[in-house]
Image (cartoon, rainbow, N blue to C red; front, top):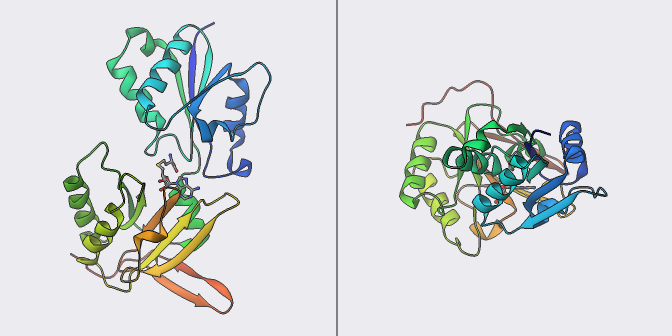
Length: 254
Ligand code: SAH
């Protein structure tokens, strides 16, 4: 049997966000690898072995999965959201590039999932309706200086910005600094969306403006969308407002 490693996106929340393709890939695997809370979301199947690991050991997890696949197994690696967005598909590619020659002979299949920014955007209306970008605020694998330069460039160029990994216990100040940095380029009234645990039972979505945005509103399960100067909010009686970015860009920002 030739080995296979399938890297599967679980989507942002519960079962209904799992695509039929992802479900079939999980069912077909002999062994599952992933961060514990993500593995817990996968339906149990008899005879399938699970290898749960912590959230700071992506390289080790990838190497273990590649070794098991190289021994002939069908292995699935799970990721929240989409596996290619700040997640395991890159970690696996990094290990293949640096690792054993035999790993290059494996079937590597990436199964996409709904990434957090799309799930949060859908709740808010259509904030990503025109040009946008995604930036991770985690400075574990890149410098804060580089993050600030990217924030400046993105806001200056008029992109809507989706902020992944906005805050954690080890990174308490970065989101507040990012809001201050963005405020140097954007109007105080720029819409900001906090989407927390979207697709799960404890989901919460808050719409505010850049001058009022407070980092304490976010936690590790939150994705933040900062609008562009074009992004608009439509208030509605008794209903959450609609946040959207029109398809036509008129204003010059930088
Ligand atoms: N691969 C994942 C992202 C991993 S980075 C994806 O495609 O979504 C982890 C970050 O994703 C979190 O810090 C948070 O910013 C965001 N995130 C993941 N799941 C989320 C959810 N259900 N609701 C809101 N944000 C989420």
